[in-house]
Length: 247
Length: 310
Ligand SMILES: Nc1ncnc2c1ncn2[C@@H]1O[C@H](COP(=O)(O)OP(=O)(O)O)[C@@H](O)[C@H]1O
Ligand SMILES: [Mg+2]
Image (cartoon, rainbow over all chains, first blue to last red):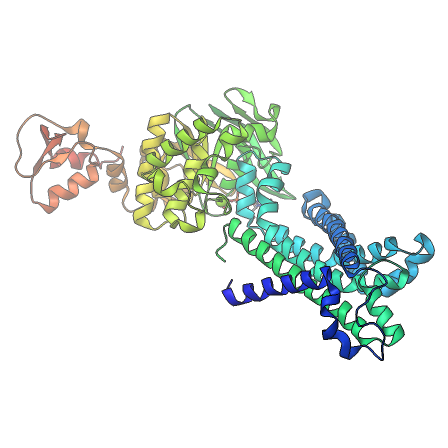
């Protein structure tokens, strides 16, 4: 990684942190976007709390999607699981093609308002990228390698844990990265069903015609997405080197 | 040591290995040779249960291999394949230590064994231990592959075209290494190859496969002297049987007392190489030495007689 982008990312992280901890210090910046004498900084709920809720929600959803998707991909690449492959693909595809808003609308009557329908939408939405990359990673390994592992007496579980997963990890991480970034953006929709996310700031801005709120919510989500993306890219590079591939 | 009794294997309607019975003595090298698709790999893989026979029994040291869980069976049998199958995410030392770790050896014993094996394969442990496979040449990867197969001191080593991907010079060296290590550990080896010269050079016994059937099993000299069928004759290459025989034998037994001119040849030289030297240097007899001591001489006539058929 070159130096300049790293410096920029550190600066971005510092800026984001400062804004969330002391948003009022940034009031002059947002003043021009707030109509009349309405407040320039969203204050109904502390921004820091909303940001933390937002991140925790996305992290939980990505973790759940990751476990499910990697589990499906493992099952689909076992000899006994070949029959499962079309089914698993169908589930993951369905999650992706269904608009998240529609998932929310369908989930609310069943599970009520709040965090749970948002979580369901995020998990369904995050499945496909991870499933696809995990399948590529696990299914694309050199057959001679797995053959050698079997010939040396590694059991199926040992082959999976010691050989297949470490070698597929860079691919799996790339799927998780995409999934997490999509999730950060999608989670803003959760506030329409009363989940506490940064979407609350944006929606409030739209309802009251306060562009400053829209900018605050949007920029905070964008900054988090850039940082999460960068973090996972770094992890992915490390895993690639660890997997013995020249990066 | 290894007994195959009427072993067959079919895939669908195709019989790929057809009623093969074979015996490999402890400490011997059996080479299995045949054209591509003749069932050599399938035969080999039935010994460590990577493939299960459709019929027949495989026994190791008198015990039916089906009485041992496959992964435990395989941990006790070395397995080396073409293209080595090294784990790309593990260092050389970790790769070599895979089976000892499965067997629960302690760290110190594994480390000592890794260094010993690297030394035997002429790879400086300090230099190679911590490298990843991607940082090795093809010949080095192949040697590590064989070292890994031998790591847990298995009494049996199965090899499937282990030298197939190497250039001729490296291949020759790899064969010599294998023979030296086999003599040292007394490992029983079954080695599959499509190269008849390799089969003759390495095997104490040679098994010839054709379309799933075992067509001949004999010592290299017997195979050359009396090929069982036209197919075996064709695999042998037909024309230069005399020289094939001569390359199997060494001059040591032909040494007689007396003097001869010129530079001595070392004991252990093949009859074929000695005859070539005799012709090239226009000497009717060559002195033979071991460790700098002259043992006697070998005459061209004695060398030539080794090329005669039965
Ligand atoms: N798992 C399998 N399924 C179907 N056919 C196979 C399988 N393994 C091997 N064969 C077939 O069996 C024949 C013998 O293969 P193999 O034992 O690999 O021969 P060799 O090693 O002598 O080249 C080939 O025609 C091959 O296509
Ligand atoms: Mg083969």
